Amino acid sequence: MLPTPEAEDLIALTRELVSKELAPRAAPAEEAAAFPRDIFRLLGRSGLLGLPYPEEDGGGGQPYEVYLQVLEEIASVWASVAVGLSVHTLACYPLSAFGDEEQRKQLPELLGGELLGGYALSEAHAGSDAGALSTRAVAEDDHYLVNGTKTWITHGGEADFYVLFARTSDDGGKGISCFLTEGQMPGLTFGPPERKMGLTGSTTAQLHFDNARVPAEWRLGDEGQGFPIALSALDSGRLGIAACAVGLAQGALDHAVRYATEREQFGRPIIANQGLAFLLADMAAAVESARATYLDAARRKDRGLPFGRQASIAKLVATDAAMKVTIDAVQVLGGYGYTRDFPVERYMREAKVMQIFEGTNQIQRMVIGRHLAKSVAK
Image 1 (cartoon, rainbow, N blue to C red):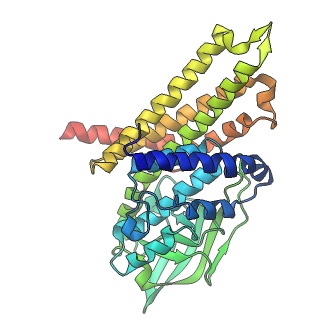
Image 2 (image 1 turned 90 degrees about the vertical axis):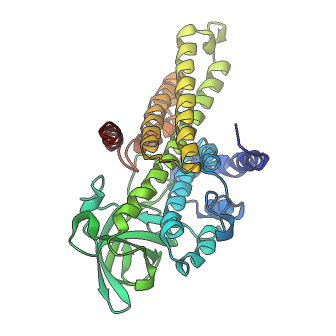
Image 3 (image 1 turned 90 degrees about the horizontal axis):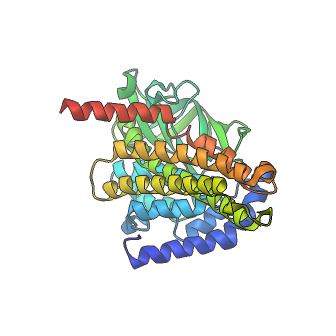
């Protein structure tokens, strides 16, 4: 149930774009590991790259529950693009939430559709433990000199801007600061794209900073405020991945149901067999339960309520459901499901990473447990 007629029109527009522009491109682009930069420009011109941000900043002024359902529609056909949209939205958050009045003047350009963002937090030895990062930014006159390497960066080498988290002191998590950087700048180079199991249409690469000069006015928030900025952004980012996972699972379910109604054995569609019908029913239950979970968290966020625990629950439930549903979709198609002639094998490969990025599901369980412990302590 969408909250407004405008939201209904937005979902209808998204479905039309997905059907006409994304669906024909998805499989060939994934097969060729081709980054679809033009698709992101199309989404931008359609007003989809800044949906949850205020209209006065160049965004779409939509509640999070609507933005996430747009993500889900895209992910049902092309997960790489949906994840890319989620990452771009995540990359705009620190400027929107923590930028000063002068810095925020850049938001319309970032949200307008021509630029694409990346989120440079993870490092080789600081993935789940983000407070252990070692990339360093040293203040010199009117700029910072940045040295270090970021890993697993979505849109690495493709983005027009990055939100960078770097150490400005040795005070653990309190020594991290947040910066906005250009996508191409002296001192910034990129590793080759990672050779991944899935999401091959989404470029993931290392960022190497070698005495890269970042103007001091591009620091977002105070020195040492970077870790809280990163954590608050990740709560919203986890909802984005939950929505992508639900879309991926819905796409796999749709293919499985279509196949089961068209494929005949022993003179009747295979969906008429109780064993298979029950399997599909369980898949549908998992998809709808996961959708309800992320929407509940999004509505809490839209109302200004705490939603960190619910975001972790949504990410955990939705990505585990996507993994199970996509595996079962392959099973429904049998031998055909194991071939690249049908998309369900790709969906299964893509589902795996959703249990890993934006905080592994083991980390989500830790986060949820800490929230529960705090609730008892009160």
